[in-house]
Image 1 (cartoon, rainbow, N blue to C red):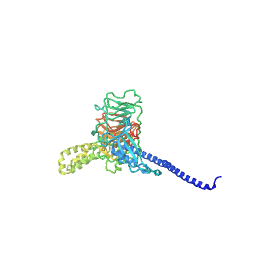
Image 2 (tube, rainbow, N blue to C red):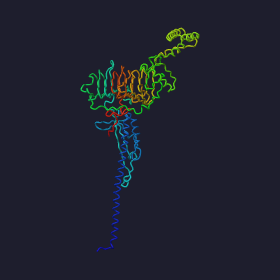
Image 3 (cartoon, rainbow, N blue to C red):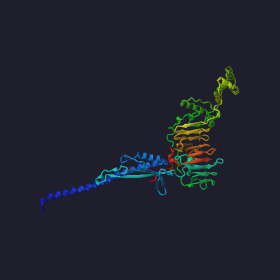
Image 4 (cartoon, one colour):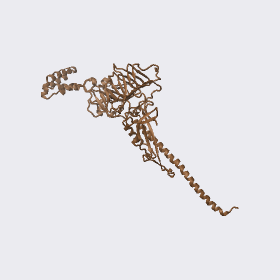
Length: 552
């Protein structure tokens, strides 16, 4: 029989064994907690850092090829992200500028003095001992590890894409104007002016339809057209043209984005337009923009009289309303007739040769006679007396050469001009005429519903960056007529309008150009390599043409 005296002793021994086993199990439980909670914490933190690195790299790539702007953008956007409950901090040394090679899938860092244009940014986001900001763990210190190091990176590439310079949705037609051929090449406005660079070979031309090169043209870049075009079996390339890049068809159409208007129709600076330099308002009540009044009194220079005669009186009243709105003292004459008030006042001034009686008699006689006779007599008297009585006028001090100038206005017509405050504008039509100039001093976006005509006028982009002047013609099959001469720095984008030159005299265009149809004769087109379609305000990024891509 068992000895009952020994039972309490055995029970105490068992309790001691369980305590040891429980302590051992507790260590295992804590280890599992360290693995589950701390590793989960590390995983979430790493994911958050990766998101920060991705957004920072994309933002930096968008600012390329400007190195400093790319670094600043990367740091700014990284700081907008959180990881482990804190804002992500990226140092300038963690942002690397370089080149991404698609064939080898590798990133090469470029030195600050490298002449190679960068196309990619690598951003490293870290929480480690090197940055003195390693992650503090919760349960792992029990196992002897109190902190963990996490480091992630991302590479984003800015791709200008193939054939992203001069593009047409349906047709591109190049030819000569007289003996002047059409040429394309490229440059980078971030580096400097076109004249200060060696022209590049990214003057690419591509269309979703037909590409026709008539006569001898020079394309320093690739020339492409869509293989699905109905006459693709015919060679659309003129045999005499010289093309430095690839020549051939593309299997898939370029997915051009429609113009994104947003709230430009209602939220714009139309009401902030100043008077032109010659003292004219430039916008009527129908939101038609016209610049081109000369500083003379000639009927032919009254702007819309040449542009669209049936708008003369409409412009008269619209101009009067605009002058009242702007609180100016501009006086509008009848646009269909010469200014009679000025002719009668000039008669008075010219007759003023120091003989007050003769002057009053001539007035009373001219009033009693018919209009035609009064005009002829006043003209003959003013001419004869201005010659014979010029010395008397000088002696008496009652006449001067300025009075004679009032009869015909300034003898040397001065083209008009206006400086647009930077911002967004929305017009129904726009015309720049008679060598008038629209000055651009900052980022300016112009939307035009219908016709856009500046054959005999132009824009002067004082920023020297084409991206600071973005023009969006939106009229279906309407024409956007480019200047005949001079140069223009801008981006013109339209999937509905036709972009054409008219009797070009060697016109130079700097920037990017997209239209439904392009008909360019005798012009020089210089593609700005620093601009991608994704940079434009009125465009959703066109897939496969240009954009920003995470590559690693």
